[in-house]
Amino acid sequence: MSNLTFAIVVFFLAFPFGFWRVKSKFKSRDWMLAIHIPVGFIILLRIFNKIYFHTGFSWLSVVYNLTAFMLAQYLAGLIYKAFKKNETDRSKKYL
Image (tube, rainbow, N blue to C red):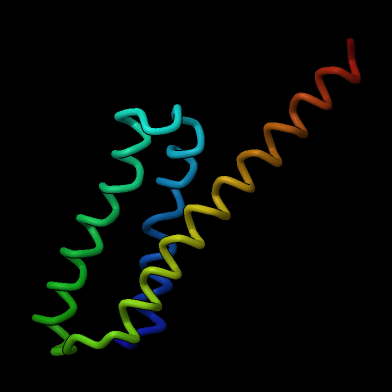
């Protein structure tokens, strides 16, 4: 599996956890879990990738994966906030 493909998988893995993170209170237990649970899955995926696809370690893959992870968390937060804002705007419109 190439670095780019792996980064895309990381993005789609971390994206739903970004929604969970943004709904949670800052630095609460849920907030910490929403950040750290996908990291465990990514480590398992890396081990699977090494065993079945015989890919080695490279610093470029770390950069790609970290960027994909952070981008997924950030975009999920932006999307959630945009929908939340839109929902409150609609409810005020009908009052």
